[in-house]
Picture 1 (cartoon, rainbow, N blue to C red):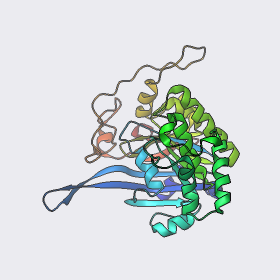
Picture 2 (picture 1 turned 45 degrees about the vertical axis):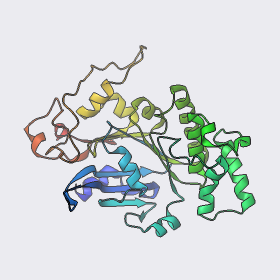
Picture 3 (picture 1 turned 180 degrees about the vertical axis):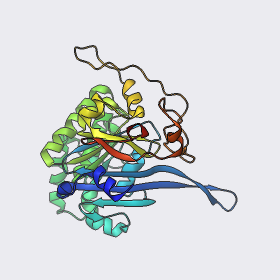
Picture 4 (picture 1 turned 120 degrees about the horizontal axis):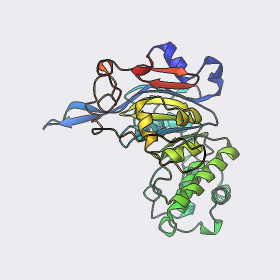
Length: 340
């Protein structure tokens, strides 16, 4: 991708002052080891060249099938995974190769993550007080008395009764445990929160409560969200822009109204055709598009466009050349030879 196209993809220079996070051709490969000497015989290309800019205060949704690399993208941004290539720039600072001590000093407080399984991410041997207080102790914030007040304040903020402060995770429901995870993420007053499938393990009624809570918190604290999900309906509700990923690459990126009303990439069209549409006046009815074949292995992705093995509109050029990710309409980007 050329510099000019990257600038187009991620936004104009006039908007740079409002950009909180920038990804420049970020890749994350996991080595495949084999043999007695455990030699590297290949790579799983979980994320294979993602470029993106995120503005302060917006919510960008990442969607796609399981194994498309959306969760790996989130974990690479926060440096739980070390990026293989590319750059991660946060608030104008390149954090791609920062040491852990540098990250703790300048980044960890500003970027937090909410994980998919609220029970697995909470220490079952610690009380709610200890769980929420832990990041405050780690970063040496506040006095002991102030930490106690901060924990109670955070509990009230996410809708938990402060009298529950001495309870353990197993004493809470799934929705309450996710609220605990959100409270812990808010403890350090972050600017960016990466939410990795935060409601997929919850009942539908509880999903709505958590989503509404996240929207209220965003308005109150000016948060920026990267919302990762396979549920297109949830993503449409909470996101400002939506990026569609397939086999580690970004297929389409647009404002949610444009993407849902007029999807351009055949993969996005297939995904949206599978979303149930309620019977109401003005509802967009789409013909069901059934993709043939299985998702290719990220350790051996297809040549050219990675989607060509399942694409109903694939041509010879799709099998040979990787399509350029470019703007084809105002604010609407797509990687597809059909638009060249």
